Length: 205
Image (cartoon, rainbow, N blue to C red; front, side, top):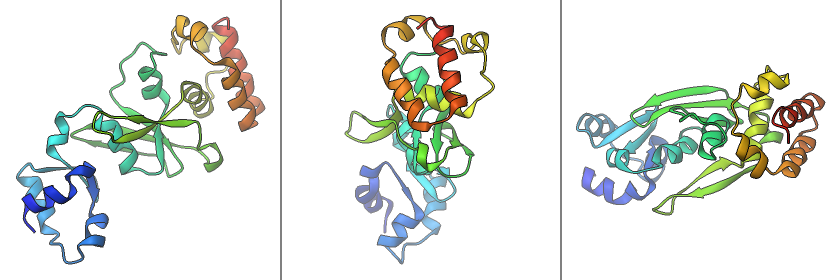
């Protein structure tokens, strides 16, 4: 199979795993991965995963790949908080949560980190659609806050909550307080619910 043929057949996916390709083309020459990477046609995302190099010029593809190279996962924590304008900082690393083990990858598309949560907490996200119709999963604003306070329990006083630098206007005007408390009750952790109430007190919600 030539690269032109491979590109025509697989490019619509954006990225692919070697297992995917070999399941469909059992006799595929594995040496092609090395040759095409050396030629700059494809780039490695992690072991066994590749993306087409022209995707580097496309917006949002890094977020799309985040959900592919570690699945199941969804974007949350600082990346989601920045996306919604809850925190002022631009986040370089794409932060996600997963039911798999905690891990981190770095490639031409950026840095990707994944924090482990229990399967029963794997909810509270929705698809975001890219220009070409592809979708990636991102936490709702309230679930991103829940995930942060669940995974980083060191935030335990009003002053420490203020150190998170959540946007005051967003917290007062856009936060869905009822949804936030509903999420906390669904998780059923008294310690987490206490931190959520401290957060609301700190931002005078």
